[in-house]
Length: 377
Image (cartoon, rainbow, N blue to C red; front, side, top):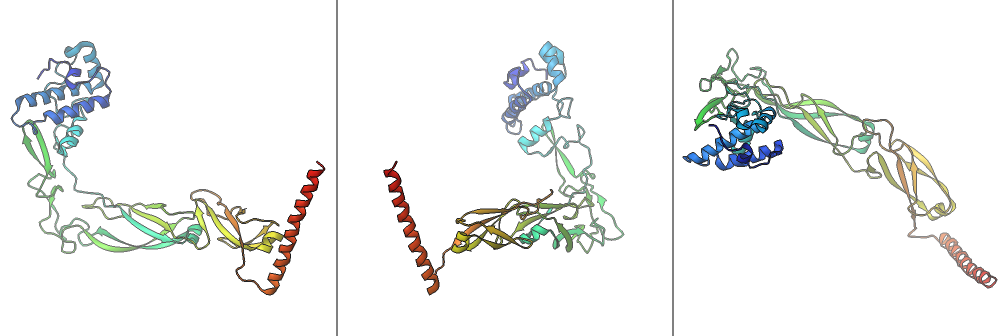
C-alpha cells in the first residue's frame, strides 16, 4: 500500500505532535479499525493499514525528518506494507497492539520479526513476606530473630527437573520447545501459549514421584535474621535468594521481613525520639526537687526547678532511639504532670489549710498595694 494522504492527516495530529501524541492517535485508530473488530470490512482493514504505515514513518526520527522535507518521495517504501516484524523506528508497534487487544505474544513476542525464539522454561521463584513483631527494646538494641519460613524448595530427588531419576524432560512436539503455538489471523501471525506443555517447551513423561513432576516441594526452613537497631514499624528487610525456589532451575525469589514494633507502656515513639510523662507532687513542683526518670537503658535523675507547671517538658539528649542506618540517637522528652492527691491525712490537710490562708492573705495584700499605687500614681 502506498498512502497518498498526508501522514499527519491520517493520524489526525499536527506536524509538531510529540511521540506521545503520535502513539495515542495511532492507538485510537487501531482500536477503531482493527480487523478483529471489523470482520469482513475491507475499508476498515485498509484504514488500519494506512494508520500503521503513517505511524511507522512518523515514529522514526530520521524518516519523519525526510518526510517533513520531501513528503512521500522522501520515505518511498519505508512504511509500505507496515512491516510488522519491527522495521527501524517501528519497534513499539507490538507493544501498542499487545496492550490494545491482549494478544500478549503477538509477532512472536519481542524476539523480532521471525518470532522463532525459544521460550525458556526457567522461571524465577516467588518473593515471600514475613511479618515480625518485636518490642521497643528489641528495636532499640537490635536483635537476631529465628524465623520459620514455609516455602517451595527444589526437589532433592530430581534436582528440580521434575523428571524421575535417570530421565530427562523432552522437548514438546507440539510447539517444538518454543512454548508457543502460532496461528494466522488475517494478516496477523498470533502466538499463543502452548496448551500441551503450558508454555514450558518441555514434556515430562516420567514425573518424579517425590514432587509429582513439579520440581519443587514445600518445606519449612529455619533461618537467623539480624534485625538492626533503630528499625520501626514498616521497616522492610530484604534477604536475597531466600524466597521460593524457581521453577525449572530458575533463580530463587527474595524474602522480605516486615517489622512491627509493639506499643510500650511508658514511651511513645516518633521517629528517633521518645516521649514520656513523669508524675511529681505539688510540693516537688512548688519547691523544686530531683526525680528519677526511667530511660531505655537505665534510670536517670532530672532536676525539677521550683515553680514547675504541669506540661513542662524536659529534654534528655541521646536517650531516644538509635538512628537507623546512621549515627547517634534521638532524644527523650519528659513531660511533667503535677499529681493532686485524692486522699489526705490530718497533718496534710492542716498544712494545706495553712497554705490556703497564706495564699488568701497574699492576694488581699496585692490588691491593697495596687490601690495605694494607683492613688499615688
